[in-house]
Image (cartoon, rainbow, N blue to C red; front, top):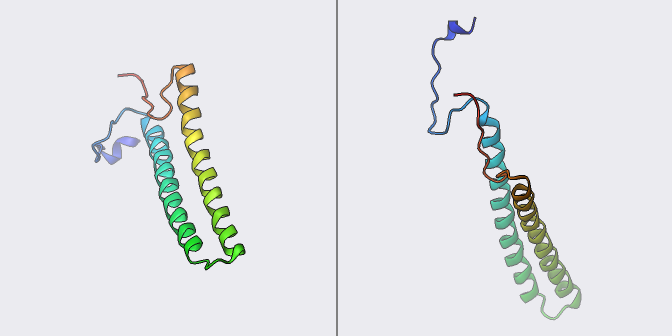
Length: 106
C-alpha cells in the first residue's frame, strides 16, 4: 500500500537511519534550549546592570537589580548543572546523551 507514493528520498543532509530522526530532533531541542538560556542570561544580566546603574542611590531599585543578577546566575547554574548531570549519567551508562547515535539494521 505504501508503494503508491513511490520512492521517498531524504531531502536533508542528515543521517537517514530508520528511527534516528526523533533522537536528532531531541538533541537539537536540548542544544537550542541551552543556547536560549545563555542568551536570556546575558540579556537579564545587562538589564539588571542597567537597573543598578540607573537606580540613583534608591536602595529598593538597587536591591531589585541585585536580586535579578542573583536569579540569573542561579538559572545559568541550573542549566549548566543539567548538562553536566546528563554528561555524567551518559558516561556512567556508556551512552552519549548529548549527542546520541542510533544503531539499527543496515
